[in-house]
Length: 121
Picture 1: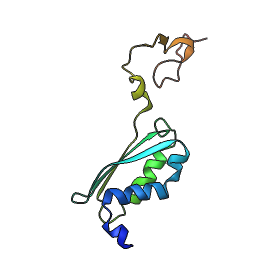
Picture 2 (picture 1 turned 60 degrees about the vertical axis):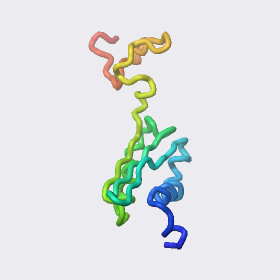
Picture 3 (picture 1 turned 120 degrees about the horizontal axis):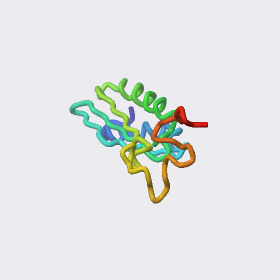
Picture 4 (picture 1 turned 90 degrees about the vertical axis):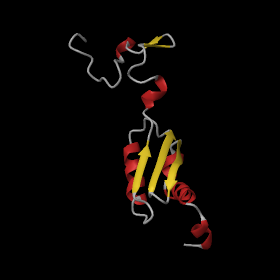
């Protein structure tokens, strides 16, 4: 570890690691932010956003980040947050009409539904 890394805060070192070791996040239009990096408790919280929200492989990315950071001697607990894509639309409790567009129109179904039902032709 160089002198400059020795003087860097845990937050700065995690941020640099994310930028250096996880370029896939930015390559796919995602963002990462270290929300908490407490050297006293060993807790680190990273939030992914942008293209990560709703990405089908975000669980792989979060697993890779967790498995690496938990190996750092000063880190005891790693939490990776990825907002649910539905949150930006109000989630499953959102009214059926968003800006005048019926979410169930045209066979799109409700949140997460892939079964059109027994009455579907």
